[in-house]
Image (spheres, helix red, strand yellow):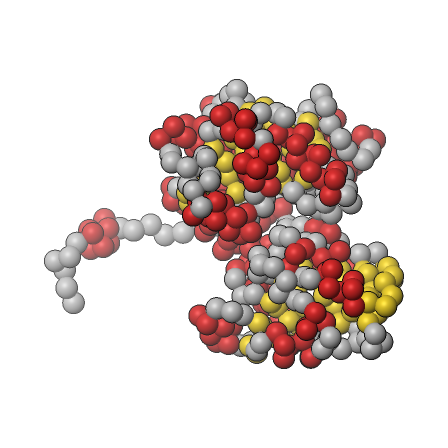
Length: 418
Protein backbone atom coordinates (compact mmCIF):
# COMPACT_ATOMS: atom_id res chain seq x y z
CA UNK A 1 0.00 0.00 0.00
CA UNK A 2 1.32 3.40 -0.98
CA UNK A 3 1.09 6.32 1.47
CA UNK A 4 2.84 9.53 2.53
CA UNK A 5 2.65 10.46 6.21
CA UNK A 6 4.97 11.95 8.82
CA UNK A 7 5.75 8.93 11.01
CA UNK A 8 4.21 5.46 11.05
CA UNK A 9 5.48 5.12 14.62
CA UNK A 10 2.71 7.46 15.79
CA UNK A 11 0.00 4.96 14.86
CA UNK A 12 -0.79 3.63 18.35
CA UNK A 13 -1.38 7.14 19.67
CA UNK A 14 -3.60 7.80 16.66
CA UNK A 15 -5.55 4.59 17.20
CA UNK A 16 -6.35 5.61 20.79
CA UNK A 17 -7.35 9.10 19.69
CA UNK A 18 -9.66 7.60 17.07
CA UNK A 19 -11.23 5.24 19.61
CA UNK A 20 -11.87 8.18 21.94
CA UNK A 21 -13.66 10.06 19.16
CA UNK A 22 -15.74 7.00 18.28
CA UNK A 23 -17.25 6.96 21.76
CA UNK A 24 -19.07 10.20 20.88
CA UNK A 25 -20.15 9.06 17.41
CA UNK A 26 -23.14 6.74 17.97
CA UNK A 27 -24.73 7.43 14.58
CA UNK A 28 -21.63 6.35 12.68
CA UNK A 29 -21.42 3.24 14.85
CA UNK A 30 -24.98 2.30 13.89
CA UNK A 31 -24.27 2.97 10.20
CA UNK A 32 -21.10 0.85 10.37
CA UNK A 33 -23.13 -2.05 11.76
CA UNK A 34 -25.62 -1.70 8.90
CA UNK A 35 -22.89 -1.28 6.27
CA UNK A 36 -21.12 -4.45 7.42
CA UNK A 37 -24.32 -6.39 6.80
CA UNK A 38 -25.55 -4.71 3.60
CA UNK A 39 -22.21 -3.79 1.90
CA UNK A 40 -23.75 -0.91 -0.12
CA UNK A 41 -20.33 0.28 -1.35
CA UNK A 42 -18.89 -3.08 -2.37
CA UNK A 43 -16.29 -2.55 -5.09
CA UNK A 44 -16.73 1.23 -5.13
CA UNK A 45 -13.48 3.21 -5.23
CA UNK A 46 -13.70 6.37 -3.11
CA UNK A 47 -11.10 9.15 -3.00
CA UNK A 48 -11.61 11.50 -0.07
CA UNK A 49 -10.02 14.91 0.43
CA UNK A 50 -10.97 15.76 4.01
CA UNK A 51 -9.37 17.03 7.20
CA UNK A 52 -7.35 14.09 8.46
CA UNK A 53 -8.59 13.90 12.03
CA UNK A 54 -9.81 11.21 14.42
CA UNK A 55 -13.40 11.85 13.32
CA UNK A 56 -12.47 11.40 9.67
CA UNK A 57 -10.70 8.15 10.54
CA UNK A 58 -13.98 6.82 11.88
CA UNK A 59 -15.74 7.81 8.65
CA UNK A 60 -13.08 6.02 6.58
CA UNK A 61 -13.57 2.92 8.74
CA UNK A 62 -17.34 3.01 8.09
CA UNK A 63 -16.86 3.38 4.32
CA UNK A 64 -14.46 0.44 4.31
CA UNK A 65 -16.97 -1.60 6.33
CA UNK A 66 -19.47 -0.88 3.58
CA UNK A 67 -17.16 -2.45 1.00
CA UNK A 68 -15.50 0.69 -0.39
CA UNK A 69 -11.88 0.86 -1.50
CA UNK A 70 -10.82 4.12 0.15
CA UNK A 71 -7.92 6.53 -0.30
CA UNK A 72 -7.59 9.71 1.78
CA UNK A 73 -5.66 12.96 1.40
CA UNK A 74 -5.76 16.15 3.47
CA UNK A 75 -8.02 19.06 2.52
CA UNK A 76 -5.90 21.58 4.42
CA UNK A 77 -2.12 21.68 4.97
CA UNK A 78 -2.43 22.48 8.68
CA UNK A 79 -5.38 20.34 9.74
CA UNK A 80 -3.76 16.90 9.70
CA UNK A 81 -3.32 14.97 12.94
CA UNK A 82 -0.15 13.06 12.13
CA UNK A 83 -0.84 10.29 14.63
CA UNK A 84 -4.26 9.68 13.07
CA UNK A 85 -2.71 9.56 9.59
CA UNK A 86 -0.33 6.88 10.89
CA UNK A 87 -3.20 4.92 12.46
CA UNK A 88 -5.17 5.02 9.22
CA UNK A 89 -2.28 3.37 7.42
CA UNK A 90 -1.12 0.96 10.11
CA UNK A 91 -4.36 -0.05 11.83
CA UNK A 92 -7.12 0.66 9.30
CA UNK A 93 -5.25 -0.28 6.11
CA UNK A 94 -6.25 2.93 4.32
CA UNK A 95 -3.81 4.62 1.95
CA UNK A 96 -3.36 8.12 3.37
CA UNK A 97 -1.50 11.14 2.01
CA UNK A 98 -1.28 13.86 4.66
CA UNK A 99 1.42 15.60 6.69
CA UNK A 100 0.68 18.47 9.05
CA UNK A 101 2.35 21.63 7.73
CA UNK A 102 2.94 20.29 4.23
CA UNK A 103 3.73 22.92 1.61
CA UNK A 104 1.49 23.63 -1.38
CA UNK A 105 3.57 21.45 -3.71
CA UNK A 106 3.19 18.48 -1.38
CA UNK A 107 -0.49 19.23 -0.84
CA UNK A 108 -1.28 19.00 -4.54
CA UNK A 109 1.01 16.00 -4.94
CA UNK A 110 -1.20 14.30 -2.35
CA UNK A 111 -4.37 15.35 -4.19
CA UNK A 112 -2.91 13.81 -7.35
CA UNK A 113 -2.06 10.62 -5.44
CA UNK A 114 -5.66 10.33 -4.25
CA UNK A 115 -6.89 10.71 -7.82
CA UNK A 116 -4.54 7.99 -9.08
CA UNK A 117 -6.96 5.70 -7.26
CA UNK A 118 -9.31 6.39 -10.21
CA UNK A 119 -12.25 7.06 -7.90
CA UNK A 120 -15.85 6.29 -8.70
CA UNK A 121 -16.99 8.63 -5.90
CA UNK A 122 -15.18 11.75 -4.72
CA UNK A 123 -15.58 13.03 -1.18
CA UNK A 124 -14.46 16.65 -0.84
CA UNK A 125 -14.06 19.39 1.74
CA UNK A 126 -13.46 22.40 -0.48
CA UNK A 127 -13.92 20.82 -3.93
CA UNK A 128 -10.22 20.34 -4.64
CA UNK A 129 -10.69 16.81 -5.98
CA UNK A 130 -13.53 17.89 -8.26
CA UNK A 131 -11.74 21.00 -9.53
CA UNK A 132 -8.50 19.09 -10.14
CA UNK A 133 -10.36 16.37 -12.02
CA UNK A 134 -12.02 18.90 -14.28
CA UNK A 135 -8.87 20.97 -14.82
CA UNK A 136 -6.04 18.45 -15.04
CA UNK A 137 -7.39 14.89 -14.88
CA UNK A 138 -10.24 14.94 -17.39
CA UNK A 139 -9.40 11.46 -18.62
CA UNK A 140 -10.50 10.13 -15.20
CA UNK A 141 -13.96 11.71 -15.38
CA UNK A 142 -15.36 8.65 -17.14
CA UNK A 143 -14.95 6.64 -13.93
CA UNK A 144 -16.94 9.02 -11.72
CA UNK A 145 -20.50 8.23 -10.71
CA UNK A 146 -20.75 11.19 -8.33
CA UNK A 147 -19.32 13.07 -5.40
CA UNK A 148 -20.10 14.63 -2.04
CA UNK A 149 -19.08 18.04 -0.70
CA UNK A 150 -18.64 18.89 2.97
CA UNK A 151 -18.29 22.66 3.21
CA UNK A 152 -19.78 25.99 2.10
CA UNK A 153 -16.72 27.06 0.13
CA UNK A 154 -16.77 23.85 -1.89
CA UNK A 155 -20.49 24.18 -2.62
CA UNK A 156 -19.92 27.74 -3.87
CA UNK A 157 -17.25 26.44 -6.26
CA UNK A 158 -19.46 23.59 -7.44
CA UNK A 159 -22.45 25.82 -8.10
CA UNK A 160 -20.21 28.11 -10.12
CA UNK A 161 -19.19 25.07 -12.17
CA UNK A 162 -22.86 24.21 -12.75
CA UNK A 163 -23.66 27.78 -13.83
CA UNK A 164 -20.79 27.68 -16.32
CA UNK A 165 -21.84 24.25 -17.60
CA UNK A 166 -18.57 22.51 -16.76
CA UNK A 167 -19.53 20.10 -13.95
CA UNK A 168 -19.53 16.57 -15.39
CA UNK A 169 -21.11 14.49 -12.61
CA UNK A 170 -23.64 14.87 -9.78
CA UNK A 171 -22.48 16.06 -6.38
CA UNK A 172 -24.46 15.87 -3.15
CA UNK A 173 -24.07 18.94 -0.96
CA UNK A 174 -23.64 17.45 2.50
CA UNK A 175 -23.06 21.01 3.69
CA UNK A 176 -26.71 21.90 3.05
CA UNK A 177 -28.18 19.09 5.16
CA UNK A 178 -29.94 20.43 8.25
CA UNK A 179 -28.05 17.93 10.40
CA UNK A 180 -24.84 19.40 9.00
CA UNK A 181 -25.11 23.19 8.73
CA UNK A 182 -27.48 23.75 11.63
CA UNK A 183 -25.25 21.76 13.98
CA UNK A 184 -21.76 21.33 12.52
CA UNK A 185 -21.41 24.89 11.21
CA UNK A 186 -23.05 26.57 14.18
CA UNK A 187 -22.10 24.48 17.22
CA UNK A 188 -19.00 22.77 15.85
CA UNK A 189 -17.39 25.84 14.30
CA UNK A 190 -18.53 28.03 17.18
CA UNK A 191 -16.86 25.95 19.86
CA UNK A 192 -13.79 24.80 17.94
CA UNK A 193 -12.93 28.29 16.64
CA UNK A 194 -12.89 29.72 20.15
CA UNK A 195 -10.88 26.67 21.24
CA UNK A 196 -8.29 27.33 18.53
CA UNK A 197 -8.00 31.04 19.36
CA UNK A 198 -7.59 30.37 23.05
CA UNK A 199 -5.00 27.62 22.54
CA UNK A 200 -3.02 29.84 20.18
CA UNK A 201 -3.16 33.05 22.22
CA UNK A 202 -4.12 32.32 25.84
CA UNK A 203 -5.83 35.74 25.83
CA UNK A 204 -8.95 36.61 27.80
CA UNK A 205 -12.17 37.03 25.80
CA UNK A 206 -14.24 38.81 28.45
CA UNK A 207 -14.48 42.53 27.79
CA UNK A 208 -12.77 42.33 24.39
CA UNK A 209 -14.19 43.57 21.10
CA UNK A 210 -14.63 40.45 19.02
CA UNK A 211 -15.32 41.04 15.31
CA UNK A 212 -17.06 38.30 13.33
CA UNK A 213 -16.83 38.89 9.56
CA UNK A 214 -19.81 37.05 8.04
CA UNK A 215 -23.01 35.99 9.77
CA UNK A 216 -23.83 32.69 8.14
CA UNK A 217 -24.24 29.57 10.24
CA UNK A 218 -20.56 29.54 11.18
CA UNK A 219 -20.62 33.23 12.07
CA UNK A 220 -23.73 32.75 14.19
CA UNK A 221 -22.03 29.98 16.15
CA UNK A 222 -18.79 31.92 16.71
CA UNK A 223 -20.67 35.06 17.76
CA UNK A 224 -22.75 33.08 20.26
CA UNK A 225 -19.73 31.39 21.83
CA UNK A 226 -17.68 34.60 22.00
CA UNK A 227 -20.61 36.43 23.57
CA UNK A 228 -21.01 33.60 26.07
CA UNK A 229 -17.41 34.18 27.16
CA UNK A 230 -18.10 37.84 27.81
CA UNK A 231 -16.83 39.40 24.58
CA UNK A 232 -18.49 42.42 22.99
CA UNK A 233 -19.40 40.94 19.62
CA UNK A 234 -19.37 43.05 16.48
CA UNK A 235 -20.64 41.66 13.17
CA UNK A 236 -19.80 42.86 9.66
CA UNK A 237 -22.01 41.76 6.77
CA UNK A 238 -22.89 42.45 3.13
CA UNK A 239 -26.31 40.80 3.33
CA UNK A 240 -29.06 43.09 4.73
CA UNK A 241 -31.14 40.18 6.05
CA UNK A 242 -28.21 38.63 7.92
CA UNK A 243 -27.26 42.07 9.23
CA UNK A 244 -30.76 42.55 10.65
CA UNK A 245 -30.62 39.08 12.18
CA UNK A 246 -27.29 39.86 13.87
CA UNK A 247 -28.73 43.10 15.20
CA UNK A 248 -31.82 41.34 16.57
CA UNK A 249 -29.52 38.74 18.14
CA UNK A 250 -28.01 41.55 20.17
CA UNK A 251 -24.77 42.27 18.34
CA UNK A 252 -23.40 45.53 17.01
CA UNK A 253 -23.37 45.65 13.20
CA UNK A 254 -21.12 48.01 11.27
CA UNK A 255 -18.89 48.17 8.16
CA UNK A 256 -15.49 46.53 8.38
CA UNK A 257 -13.80 49.92 8.06
CA UNK A 258 -15.35 50.95 11.40
CA UNK A 259 -14.88 47.59 13.09
CA UNK A 260 -11.18 47.59 12.16
CA UNK A 261 -10.53 50.55 14.44
CA UNK A 262 -11.94 48.98 17.60
CA UNK A 263 -11.56 45.21 17.26
CA UNK A 264 -9.29 43.13 19.48
CA UNK A 265 -10.06 39.82 17.75
CA UNK A 266 -11.08 39.38 14.11
CA UNK A 267 -12.44 36.11 12.66
CA UNK A 268 -13.38 35.67 9.00
CA UNK A 269 -16.12 33.19 8.06
CA UNK A 270 -17.39 34.29 4.65
CA UNK A 271 -16.05 31.88 2.02
CA UNK A 272 -15.01 34.97 0.06
CA UNK A 273 -11.77 36.67 -0.93
CA UNK A 274 -9.86 39.42 0.92
CA UNK A 275 -12.55 40.38 3.41
CA UNK A 276 -9.75 41.74 5.61
CA UNK A 277 -7.34 43.74 3.48
CA UNK A 278 -4.87 46.65 3.43
CA UNK A 279 -7.29 49.46 4.30
CA UNK A 280 -8.40 47.45 7.34
CA UNK A 281 -4.91 46.53 8.53
CA UNK A 282 -3.88 50.21 8.55
CA UNK A 283 -6.72 51.04 10.96
CA UNK A 284 -6.20 48.18 13.43
CA UNK A 285 -4.93 48.87 16.92
CA UNK A 286 -1.58 47.63 18.16
CA UNK A 287 -1.80 43.94 19.06
CA UNK A 288 -4.91 43.11 17.03
CA UNK A 289 -5.43 39.36 16.57
CA UNK A 290 -6.59 38.18 13.13
CA UNK A 291 -7.64 34.68 12.13
CA UNK A 292 -9.80 32.72 9.73
CA UNK A 293 -12.38 29.99 10.24
CA UNK A 294 -13.60 29.87 6.65
CA UNK A 295 -12.15 27.20 4.39
CA UNK A 296 -9.31 29.01 2.58
CA UNK A 297 -6.79 31.51 3.95
CA UNK A 298 -7.63 33.78 1.00
CA UNK A 299 -10.25 35.44 3.21
CA UNK A 300 -7.38 37.47 4.66
CA UNK A 301 -5.15 39.43 2.26
CA UNK A 302 -1.94 38.01 3.66
CA UNK A 303 0.26 39.18 0.73
CA UNK A 304 -0.82 42.77 1.44
CA UNK A 305 -0.01 42.32 5.13
CA UNK A 306 3.43 40.99 4.22
CA UNK A 307 4.09 43.98 1.95
CA UNK A 308 3.06 46.39 4.69
CA UNK A 309 5.23 44.81 7.37
CA UNK A 310 8.66 46.09 8.30
CA UNK A 311 9.25 42.98 10.42
CA UNK A 312 7.68 39.54 10.64
CA UNK A 313 8.43 37.09 13.41
CA UNK A 314 6.90 34.03 15.03
CA UNK A 315 6.25 35.06 18.62
CA UNK A 316 4.43 31.91 19.69
CA UNK A 317 3.41 28.68 18.00
CA UNK A 318 0.66 29.53 15.49
CA UNK A 319 1.21 33.30 15.87
CA UNK A 320 3.04 35.44 13.32
CA UNK A 321 3.54 39.04 14.37
CA UNK A 322 3.57 41.63 11.59
CA UNK A 323 4.99 45.01 12.62
CA UNK A 324 3.73 47.81 10.38
CA UNK A 325 5.51 51.07 9.55
CA UNK A 326 3.47 52.81 12.23
CA UNK A 327 4.84 50.46 14.85
CA UNK A 328 1.51 48.72 15.34
CA UNK A 329 1.67 44.94 15.52
CA UNK A 330 -0.90 42.65 13.91
CA UNK A 331 -0.93 39.02 14.99
CA UNK A 332 -1.98 36.46 12.37
CA UNK A 333 -3.01 33.07 13.71
CA UNK A 334 -2.30 29.75 12.00
CA UNK A 335 -1.03 31.33 8.76
CA UNK A 336 -4.59 32.45 8.11
CA UNK A 337 -5.76 28.87 7.73
CA UNK A 338 -8.61 27.26 9.65
CA UNK A 339 -7.75 28.22 13.21
CA UNK A 340 -9.96 25.52 14.72
CA UNK A 341 -7.84 22.87 13.01
CA UNK A 342 -4.48 24.65 12.80
CA UNK A 343 -4.24 25.34 16.54
CA UNK A 344 -6.86 22.97 17.94
CA UNK A 345 -8.53 19.67 17.00
CA UNK A 346 -11.47 20.79 14.90
CA UNK A 347 -15.10 20.10 15.67
CA UNK A 348 -16.06 17.88 18.60
CA UNK A 349 -16.64 14.29 17.52
CA UNK A 350 -20.30 14.33 18.63
CA UNK A 351 -20.96 17.05 16.05
CA UNK A 352 -18.96 15.42 13.27
CA UNK A 353 -20.94 12.25 13.94
CA UNK A 354 -23.88 13.78 12.05
CA UNK A 355 -21.83 15.43 9.30
CA UNK A 356 -20.01 12.21 8.51
CA UNK A 357 -23.18 10.16 8.77
CA UNK A 358 -24.42 12.36 5.93
CA UNK A 359 -21.22 11.60 4.00
CA UNK A 360 -21.54 7.84 4.48
CA UNK A 361 -25.23 7.61 3.61
CA UNK A 362 -24.86 10.02 0.68
CA UNK A 363 -22.08 7.85 -0.74
CA UNK A 364 -24.34 4.80 -0.46
CA UNK A 365 -27.14 6.78 -2.12
CA UNK A 366 -24.85 7.69 -5.02
CA UNK A 367 -23.76 4.09 -5.45
CA UNK A 368 -27.40 3.11 -5.87
CA UNK A 369 -28.92 6.08 -7.72
CA UNK A 370 -26.10 7.85 -9.60
CA UNK A 371 -27.28 6.61 -13.00
CA UNK A 372 -30.53 8.56 -12.63
CA UNK A 373 -28.88 11.83 -11.50
CA UNK A 374 -27.83 14.78 -13.65
CA UNK A 375 -24.52 16.65 -13.48
CA UNK A 376 -25.54 19.22 -10.87
CA UNK A 377 -25.50 19.86 -7.13
CA UNK A 378 -28.13 17.96 -5.15
CA UNK A 379 -29.24 18.32 -1.53
CA UNK A 380 -28.94 15.39 0.82
CA UNK A 381 -32.26 13.50 0.44
CA UNK A 382 -34.63 14.62 3.19
CA UNK A 383 -35.20 11.04 4.31
CA UNK A 384 -31.47 10.65 5.03
CA UNK A 385 -31.30 13.97 6.90
CA UNK A 386 -34.29 13.05 9.06
CA UNK A 387 -32.99 9.53 9.71
CA UNK A 388 -29.66 10.91 10.94
CA UNK A 389 -31.42 13.30 13.33
CA UNK A 390 -33.54 10.43 14.67
CA UNK A 391 -30.49 8.20 15.11
CA UNK A 392 -28.66 10.99 16.93
CA UNK A 393 -31.54 11.55 19.33
CA UNK A 394 -31.71 7.82 19.99
CA UNK A 395 -27.98 7.71 20.67
CA UNK A 396 -28.41 10.57 23.15
CA UNK A 397 -31.28 8.80 24.90
CA UNK A 398 -33.78 11.49 23.90
CA UNK A 399 -37.35 10.67 22.88
CA UNK A 400 -39.78 12.97 21.07
CA UNK A 401 -43.51 13.01 20.38
CA UNK A 402 -45.29 11.59 17.33
CA UNK A 403 -48.35 12.93 15.56
CA UNK A 404 -51.65 11.30 16.46
CA UNK A 405 -53.87 9.99 13.66
CA UNK A 406 -56.17 12.94 14.28
CA UNK A 407 -53.27 15.40 13.93
CA UNK A 408 -52.02 13.75 10.73
CA UNK A 409 -55.52 14.01 9.25
CA UNK A 410 -55.82 17.65 10.28
CA UNK A 411 -52.48 18.63 8.74
CA UNK A 412 -53.34 16.79 5.51
CA UNK A 413 -56.75 18.40 5.07
CA UNK A 414 -57.97 21.76 3.89
CA UNK A 415 -61.59 21.41 4.94
CA UNK A 416 -61.08 21.98 8.63
CA UNK A 417 -61.08 25.73 9.26
CA UNK A 418 -60.98 27.77 12.41
